[in-house]
Length: 244
Image (cartoon, rainbow, N blue to C red; front, side, top):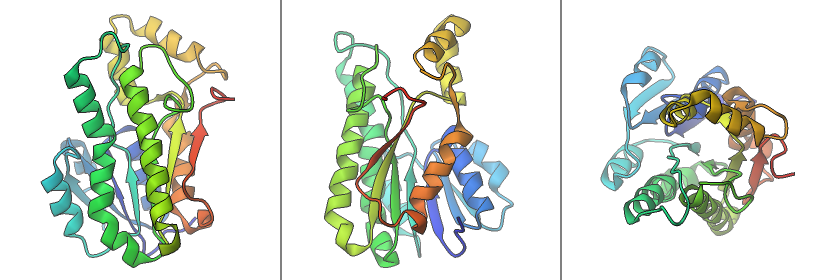
């Protein structure tokens, strides 16, 4: 897949799946706008001639509009930013719901809304939203708030796809299983017993292992590329057989 002359914006590009996707897009000759709420790790991209880096908090509507609305061109958007809340509906608090929806659902919605004029002008643009297999696909213990928001991401994806299918804009979601990222490592450490937590995450994967970000990235690039131009409105599981 070649992205020459294409400009793609990636949120949460500082680490994990966002960073791996940004690096792969560069290798595929794209112009990449790499954003993250934490700008410091993006500095390693700074010297690349086809890379623009910017700090972006997707919960800040004005900042999203200023950054994306100020671009000259956009051919693709990968909404990767998200947070994971642990707990059942019994333990969920108002603030948990508010933050999770603000980041996981309203965040991508803000980015899509701000990017819409540019994406429609591109005529063959594509949006990829980060959902999860833990959503409307499957449930998981202690993931009530998270799974609810990721189900909403699938709903957002299908709505955008339906509204703009005749205007050349596609919108799809990916639904990964558990991916070993720095974010996951932080949650494993926070559990108080890293090894036990890692064992529990691994055991729920039918393949008996976690995914690596590099195993998710090819699907992201495919959906952003014109090779997938007949696919829209889909929530595609890439979960090691979890939902089989």
